[in-house]
Image (cartoon, rainbow, N blue to C red; front, side, top):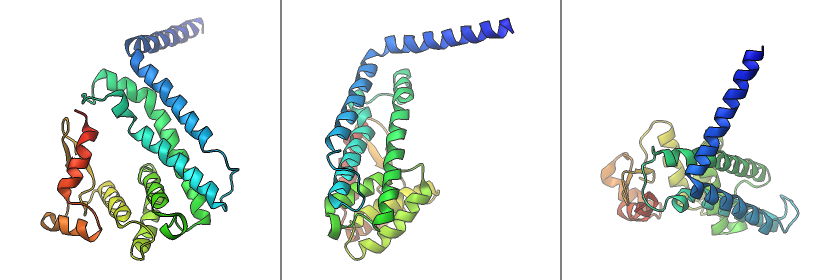
Length: 238
């Protein structure tokens, strides 16, 4: 028994030493993470002026604004920590992901659960009730809920109905359709999903009927694929 107690103590000490060594090795990342926590806390404070009331559209707008701003800051936080392109398998990135990923996941799950609650009161955050900005913000929150595909598919069916009557952006439907098609192992339709293949080099995954891709994008009031690539290139670092 004493041996196992001693072994447990040694293992705990080694783990603590390794963590401290990592902290000493990447203090700039730790400083960025502290700044991240402070920024999210400040956003939460700023957009907590109304008491929670799902029937109060002012509160709904405030809550969606907070979630959208926190989401945007969080999913783009890597570009703040690593402004230049870096090998995603490098020890520095691995350490960053170990520290930051739990925070990001917690935020995305929290946002998703709130969206589910809001959709018990509203069919969607429609353009006529809330405006175009809130429609897009709500869509982004669901688009990033990749851990809950059934919820995304539920929303996709809602968007399919609503974009035809101009109660949501056509692009919202197109992006979510592609995201779910890719998740199901199918070709995307509108060329919205892709990956970084180097600095300033974002490329879309394969699409169905590639020859008519830009026409389909135009039908959904979207820019050309060339414009999509231009917009996404900076996300890949310099």
